[in-house]
Length: 445
Image (cartoon, rainbow, N blue to C red; front, side):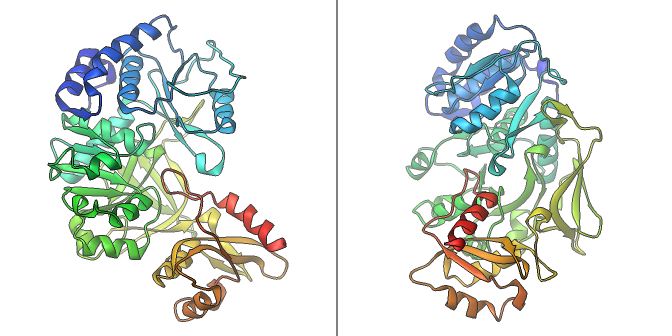
């Protein structure tokens, strides 16, 4: 059973980072912890700490200092813009901001008289791609439950993590948590360091990627290095079949995952052996979670020991979460995701799920990126619209003709918009609302 946070002393964290952390400037971490501890020691109990450090050692030093002191922490993306920061300040009203080389909006307000509903909380950001930032309320117990489920599922005593994702994000932060709780090694590097083989022995390590990162690596000299990892966890956004085929051809041990900030990372995972055998679903549910399919639409409902306690500042009234995601279990018990209810396009009375159309378009190998949305249409209700980045001089006419053998007629996009690149966040997710506005503007011209 996982220990509670206060059973881990400052010395425990320092000892772990001294013996198990490999990161640029990691030798500075003990001194930084002391400096930050001195900086925040004057805070009142339950004072809210906003953590927006970009550099990994400063992030870890800030987190360790603040959390062992018992302060609730809000993890933040240092690359948010002013509009996003203003949302955060209006919602959180922090008592102190730990952020180096970061300009904050001038209208910061603070409020030390607004206690958190859960003591010793760790708030992890979510929802940024929709334009509305929320914080999922976690504590040590919810995060440790995710680690326990992960270790049981992969039958591991120690989890060794090679992290190239930002630590403020759940997929990066949980790599630290898995390694720390299990006493495994944690390597934090960037793409350039990975390419230079600064850390050569990768066979014991898990690495977490999003599909756009995997695509970048497979197109670079790093693809051979990726095949050395014990497991490559892939999540954050749907992966397309061409990408998965390329990874399988190069014998990369992918583990396709399904999870979210609210569940402290994955709750279902396809094991690498199953991926290499040809499976492409989300795999089996991890032992700390329960997933059920509810209603005729197929919405996913989650109950998990790792489930967040609420969205700051509100606590969930039920220990479960019904999602917008739609899915089903096949006859082997594997979880399959087919899309999101809110993304569903109703055109001429027919239901169209963008993921299916996007997959068919990617399979033509005529595009490098694709997003399918629905825009208002006076005749059809909604018109299926493809916003794509073409390969070479591929035309919309060619794409439409190719799709006739792959999709029903009502699923084939009625509008095609060619761009040089699609806007994606650091996790590879597209802001569909933004693209809908762009499509409406372009089609009205």
